[in-house]
Amino acid sequence: MPELYLIVIASVFLVSLISLVGIATISFKTRVLERYVFIFVSLAVGALLGDAFIHLIPESFEALGDPKLTSFLVISGLFIFFVLEKVLHWNHSHKLHSHKHPHIKPLGTMALASDGIHNLLDGLIIGASYLVSIEVGVATTLAVMLHEIPQEIGDFGVLIHAGYSKMRALVLNFLSALLAILGAIIALLLGASSETLTNYIIPIAAGGFIYIAVADLIPELQKVTRIRSSLIQIVAAFVGVLAMGFLAL
Image (cartoon, rainbow, N blue to C red):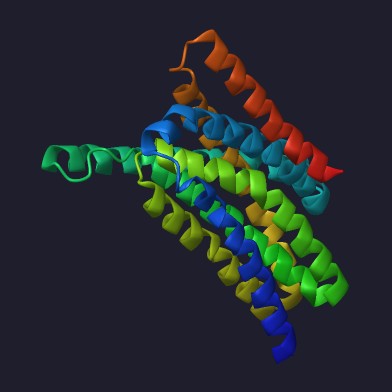
């Protein structure tokens, strides 16, 4: 059993390292990165919506077997993130008056919260899959790793857009990714019942992803009105959706 625990922790840590994908942009000048960051934000929109509608919601309908309960949990996720953003905007407004970190948008915290839930879920799923068998665990880990690449690129871009420096965005993204380890530990401690917990969290997470994409990211993209940039946004968002669709196959 201790060997299984080590394999699970090593697997989720490997998945967490994908969050450092933004390190490839460290050499870019901040001005250049800010000019093209809307492409990453567009990719995040597609990845979040694709993940919610292609992966999480269909999976929830199948796992829970109750369309009304699943729909209620998705709506709950939307409301949870709506309330969270209200609190963040109130806090942000308070900081503006006290002149503390006025340049950081609440959108950054929302993205980190969304990504944190996602990573916790990934850890739960990987941990639960290793309880079935080593082979299933390895296959699940590889699937999650592929799934994380477009997601993490988009998340890094969103954090830059929210006002974080490249290094701070990288560190915060990595710390958020480490929640996968917590998820894996919870799965191992709960054993078979971890699957039930995951089934209820997944639709709530889907609602959160939809809220972030539709209420926060798309309005940011609408501020760009140039035809060429708008077309690039649409293509990048579509690529994000296609990436999630391809992984579903």
